[in-house]
Image (spheres, rainbow, N blue to C red):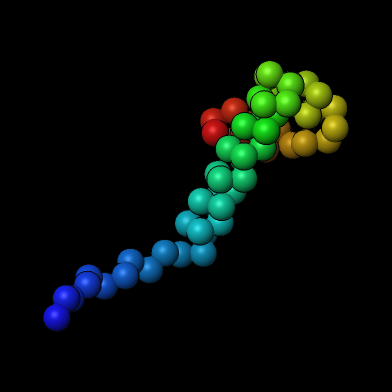
Length: 59
């Protein structure tokens, strides 16, 4: 019989951070594909927050 280890329980905050990072990477990849670059001034003009833009830059 094969025994597996106990699953590591992740917190909701960790899951939200992981999901947010995945979405940011997808947004950034899509912008790079469509426009060839990420236009932070355009995003800022469209109303995206500075926190969002900072995390997008990190992704």
